[in-house]
Length: 206
Ligand code: TYD
Image (cartoon, rainbow, N blue to C red; front, side):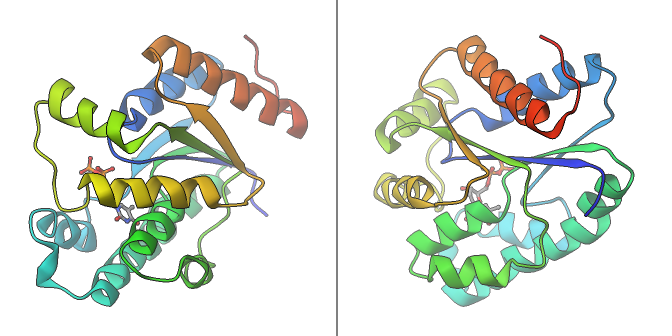
């Protein structure tokens, strides 16, 4: 057990994780907490190899791809997440091992085996699953970001990923409807965090 709090943001691409995470960080800092914002894939050596795969996943086998995500996470946990939790900080991570179970699961690996392989990683106190349909997320990626879809983001693939995210039974997962305004989504996120803090007896005001 460590004294910190770990919150993971999960969901398919385009659901707004990277908008919502800094807003929650600001809210928690205003309450006096030390908050570490981090993300996967990381900017480390394995994360860089993963990013190189975005345009052409065929360069490596599914197993090699899975291995890269696990190696990247081992480094992330050892060098960033655990030290911050041991110091009692709040860690907000944009993606965690649920992404591996969902994305590499959709690519044909066994999600249960993926969870097993990630058992070195501390279980989050809460997973905020930003949920929307693959069709909505693809529209957002194309129209709002003006981007084309990379190899991890093809719509049929995202449908499988969304279905897997929705199927995970973990009690730490809180589903947030992400097909709403930034403010509405953020207010649901804050409410969920306040409830989790209240259960743990940690102070957090409105
Ligand atoms: P993303 O959050 O889009 O990162 P960035 O904005 O920095 O490019 O994640 C990159 C892609 O990697 C995304 O499509 C999901 C995929 N991914 C996996 O397939 N498995 C994983 O374990 C993780 C962490 C990400």
